[in-house]
Image (cartoon, rainbow, N blue to C red; front, side, top):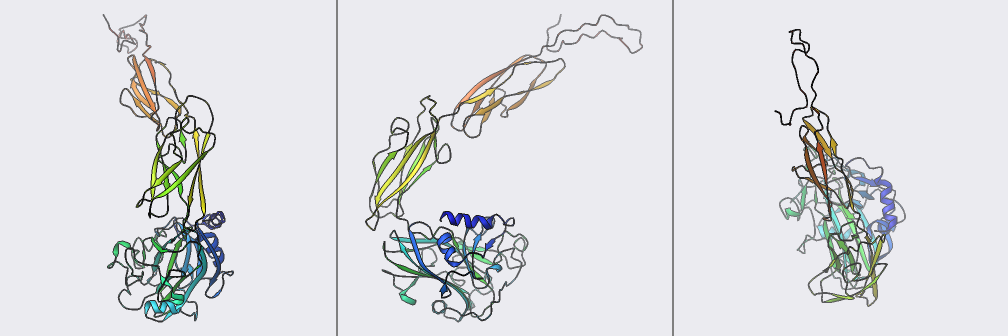
Length: 486
């Protein structure tokens, strides 16, 4: 997803109601394709919606933010058989419907479903993939779940792909790639529901059930699929056409929608470099943990040699683990993992950088490069401040505290008394020595101590009058608790 897509999505996410599907219908189909739907390795042209240039907004298509819902996709693009405004929750209607007037259906959807269709929303565009595969993620939802399962009157959708190497029964020899995982069966209300491939189905109530009918984190549709992935093999550099279509089936009521994940329409052609199990986000700390350098490719076919070129201010094999110039991802594997550790050298060098580039030849025969910059930071020592205590008399317990800072991640405390908090209570009527060890998530630790002195002197009054008047009737010597007496 492009930077502009992030800005577009942020513009309406910022106005989101708490825990509700939020829509932005100010974006044109062209913007939704170019700035929201597309990911890496794909160039799209000739965007149309319902046969018209994709430069005008339409009530049947919008951007969405589903991050606060149970939808399963954080954001992306929505196509609906009615107006998209019927999709947000809660699910408080038995059959939410947006009547649009006399809107036509679609011949490919009618061929797929065997019934007349209405209110079709059809998004089409050409694209050129940079890799040899295409994929994107989607969720299909409908108000017709579960009431109309098996009745032969269902809303229908499809992803109709045409181009080199593609053969199917639809327009332009297109094939429908909206398939149930592990099958050649298209996703539909009859084919995928609570009773058929139920592992891919999410029940969302019937419009009257709690909590679905009151909590806006649940969308309006009575049921929807889990996030599924549409996939196809393509030829690098060739031109393809995709038709994303949805329509009411049999009648023009009870809406359905298909959600497509932002940035997921992609044809990855480059090796990705990532850091896992790092001591800091995307980077390393000297002497702190051993991270994994992941070299990942989009497929598992054949051995793949990846040339690694190093740059930056860090020295290979001196500041960090030696990284080879060539790694091979073996056939059947999508990635290899290399251990990566930054060495503690005791020098105050500031942040160093390791710039790593992976060079491969893609399926088009082009040389492609992907890079990652990994910061390496000096280890920040743990500072622990404690203070010895001279107590006043007659204190049964007294708090002692270790003030700690520095280190990486959350600091943990271990007192010799068994305490695990920065402050513990200790006896105040006797002398004592206490130690605390403070550790960070890198495994570094510092131990400090606290001495507690009761400090109470013996106080002997110089007069007492045992006359029974309640004043100074007894001789009491203070400060003897914890002392030896004769």
